[in-house]
Image 1 (cartoon, rainbow, N blue to C red):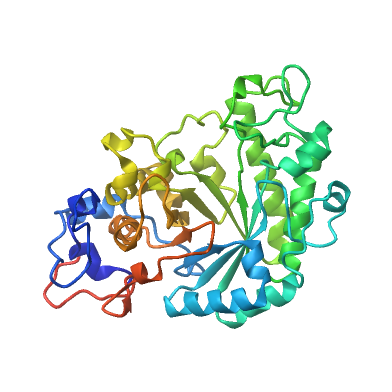
Image 2 (cartoon, rainbow, N blue to C red):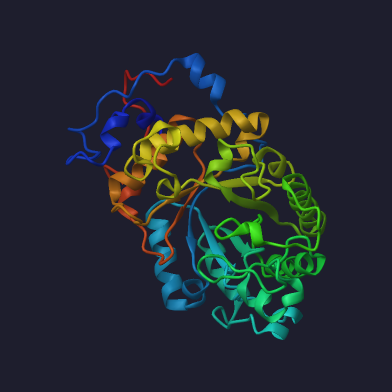
Length: 390
């Protein structure tokens, strides 16, 4: 039973406000009754029942450089298995445009290929031999390498130059079909290498820069055309890739669970989810603004932040809510994240019935101890005798 005990026997939400010096040390001395939640309220918000083929998934993201090193790969597989996890997301293309899949013609043309994973098939075999579900992560439209080398495919400025964000990173134009084909070529080769799933990231239009200067190949660009364009790409991806035997998923902004405006990037989570098997809102507390969900500092309040985000996601997605598989934060940005903060996110989501998730750390330095309690995985602890499970 996934987190059954900790849905009713968990530190109160306030304990995960890490301004407390004893912030959420999960021990037998610290466990107290959870805030009351009625059975009917939980049932009303609980994700709908998934199809029979859907299995519980708990994983971590791994960089292409780490996955491609046999020594590092073996260590990570050992750590993942010891933590009781069952999935690995492996980066095959990053936002700078560097990618790790051989023999893609356009990648050769623009110099995007890096030999970080010399034998992709052997890499995938190692993870699968350990019983791990394998997911290939491919960044789509934030692609500095392609945009710089092929300005005709880039988001342009009103003056005709290549647009870039505040960090100087250029994007490709999501309306360009050649960009679609490039990424689908990478995804097809990942499927051929044996991956179980393809996950698209940066399935959106730019946001982190002076977007008023962005010019696209479609002159009537607006939220409606942006959303329709993303849906068209995902529909094409499904037609091309599902026959190859892979599942499909996307990453979206965490706030799309609560904000259906499109957020200026074309992401409407309920519509995009219709084309995919799974959806991963990137619910990193450090990425929420102060005041979001009425919280003074979401980054210091991971339990409350994830509680609010997952509740909204379930309500918004309705019958598709079983597709939710959020990314949680296992890194520090503006506030130090340790065991209590990582664990708090998992517990908060589980209390809402969201029990599938992926952890993110850009350096593969995961807080493995956060995933265990009394030497058991926290998502497999059974309820103590006499405890009521809502």
